[in-house]
Image (cartoon, rainbow, N blue to C red; front, top):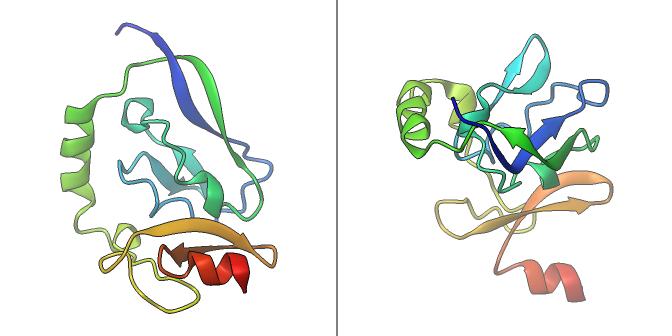
Length: 130
């Protein structure tokens, strides 16, 4: 398979606690918990968007540009079919301020009081201005 230079998630296993908070934000299903650690299961599934970065409480995830396989949208679609019945991939995220779910309003990852969490777009002004 050809290699291309692109951005992809890198996981520092020494920093990873295996908490799993990075799994749900990865819409492509590229990240899985394997043997108690987060891993990019198949690099062609990682689009490099980095939604997982903001929720890692230990900073184990970074975005790096390197040579790897191209992103494969078809592989993502097929992989999502296999994840549909796994409960660990069907976690509904909620705004930590108002409780609104990701199904009702867009959520953004944040760090609040040293903890990784989510806030909805309606609550961002309250978060910023108090």
